[in-house]
Every structure is written in C-alpha cells, then in structure tokens.
Amino acid sequence: MIKFKIPFHRPYISQEEIEEVTKVIKSGWLTMGPKTLEFEEKFKEYIYSDSEKKGFAISLNSCTAALHLALKAAGIKPGDEVIIPTNTFIATAEAVTYLGAKPVLCDVEYETHNMDVSLLESLITEKTKAIIPVHFGGQPCDMDEILKIAKKYGLYVIEDAAHALPSWYKGKKIGTIGHLTCFSFYATKTLATGEGGMITTFNEEFAKSIKINRLHGIDRDAWNRYTLQGDWYYEVVEQGYKYNTTDLQSALGIAQLNKLEWMWKRRKEIAQKYEEAFKHTSIETLKIKSDRETSWHLYVIKVNNRDELYKKLKEKGIGTSVHFIPVHRHPYYKNKFNYKKEDYSVAEEVFKRCLSLPIYPGLNEEEVEYIVENVVKYAR
Ligand SMILES: Cc1ncc(COP(=O)(O)O)c(C=O)c1O
Image (tube, rainbow, N blue to C red; front, side):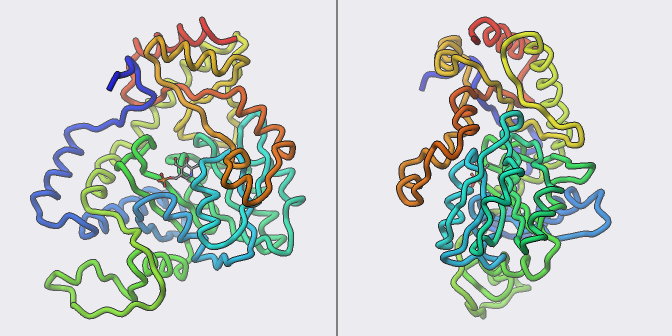
C-alpha cells in the first residue's frame, strides 16, 4: 500500500487506549458488558453535563444502526416520508428505507451545506412523519426553526449527529435538543472506536425500544445471562437486530471521551490556521453561524478546480476527500425514488466545488503549513 505523506485522517490513539483495551482482553469479557455500561454512563454524563434535564444514552454498533432504531422507536412505517438533506452520507437515506419509508430530499444552504430550512414546509405532506437534520461537518443546523416546524406539523426530529461531537447550538450541546440524536464513532470521527454509535434521548419509551431492538428483540438486558447475576431465561418480544457494541470498542470509547474536548480544541486551532490562510484568496470556506460551535469534524473548502486540486494534492502526498456525493445522484436511490438533480441546484453546485482537507488532533504545525502552502498554490 502506497502511503500518503499526510493522510486524510489519522485516529488519535495513545497509551491510554492501548491499556484500556488490553485490560478488556485480559478480563475474559469481550462483547457488550461492564465496559459498555460504563461508556454509556460516561457519555450520558458528558452530553447532559450542562442540561438541567437528564436523559438516556444507548450504545450501538454504528450510527447507521442508531438512525434505524431511532426511526423505528419513533414509529416510522412503510409508506411514511422522512425529510433529510440530500448532502449527506448515504446512511441517512438508507436507514429510512430499512423501514419501508421514503427519504424526501431537502436542498442545502450554500454557505453551511446544512439543510435549507426555508424549504422545509414545502416538502411536508400528509405522509411526513419526521425530519432528520444532519449537522454537516459538525456545524449544528437551524434547530429552533426545525423544531418549530416539527411542532406545527406533529413531526419527530431525529438528529444525525455523526459529525457533531462535541457541537453546541445556542449554548446547548448537540444530543440534548431533538427527540433523538444519533452519533457515530466510525474510525474517522471525532471520537473513534473503529465502528460504533450512540443514541441520546429524553424519552424513556424510546430508550426502552432501542435497548430491546439492539439485541434480537429480547425483553430485558440479556447481555449478562452468562454471569452469576444473570439468568439463562429470556423472551423475544419483537423482531430485533444484532446492533450491540462490544467492550473492546467501549474501552476505546472511554479513553477517547476523556480527551474529547482537548481533541476538539486542537481541531479548532487547525481550523483557525486554515481560515487565516485562505481569508484573502479565492478559496471559499464554510460560514460558521455566530450562535453555534462546530466540532470541526470536517474542514471543507470550495474551489473552481476541485478535481484538479484533488489530483495535485494527491501528487504532493496530501489526502483529501469529498463530502458528499448527494443522495439524489446515487443510481439506486435516484431510480427508486425518481429524484431529479434540477431540484437540488445548491447541492449540485456545492458538490462540484467542495473538497475536505485533513483536520485531526495529530496533525503537526509543519504538516498544516505544508497543506496550506499547496492548497493556496494549486486552488483556482
Ligand atoms: C452524516 C453521516 N450520517 C451517518 C453516518 C453513518 O455512520 P456509521 O458509519 O457509524 O454507521 C455517517 C458516516 O460517515 C455520516 O457521515
């Protein structure tokens, strides 16, 4: 494998993660167990730390699974419609189709790449049951406006917060705003466990449904049936899934959570360096609205020569990526739901011009300078 000089992403793994995972390996309990309960507890403490009301945190093996079970808990059924932005990873749309529902696509804002809330009401029909705002790159969507519309039409708001850990909207942490919030711990995310996800919610019934569904539809916590505290008997009360996480991943998660805000500050410093460097050039950067804080999961620029710049940077050993190929362009979804690209002109423009640069805590100053130098040199 030919390696990039500066890869698009490098997880930030230190001795603490190695020690925590080693302890789990030596403990003899590899799958969901005490470490997963501890991770859920710590994640809950972190998300709800500034919130008067405390909710639930339920771990899963991915954000895709989280979106699926969140939609199921909200009662989404075949024939229902769920509004999502077209500029998202396919998992957002895919989870909607798992339940036989239709993803109705919303165009995005040019400045933030987030769902354009001014279009929302025009997309609502009698079949609409929920809205999934995706906090693109970590910047929260216009949650007040979305919640207001959701309330008016009796819709659930299920946040796709795969990028938004930690992010704040008007001082509130993402995870404490919508009816359900889904996080990702995929390898490139701000908290990485390889694969993994979490749902936060204030609703006890939702939390119960998700717990049952993540482990084969079993009526109670059955992970401990091989321990002295547990019991072999269980009943399956609905058709469930195998969506639980493991103690190995949870050990990684706990260690990553301990340094989450430090990692966020480092990302923010790098983002500031990029902002400063691109300020007086033709390179466009995302506008971060003044009443919110982004996790800086992604640093996205817009240029006129995206494909050429991607190739040039690759030649220079710099890994970059494109977020995202809009949902309406993927053949399976385009054919199934008859999406027309003319309906998503802003997302089309964004897609043509956008490029995501490396941004992660392990990037050093020299690497940031090398990236800046080459981007400024080759961007048009
Ligand atoms: C916006 C968005 N939603 C959902 C997902 C799915 O996350 P996971 O890989 O944890 O299933 C991703 C993953 O990259 C994503 O970017």
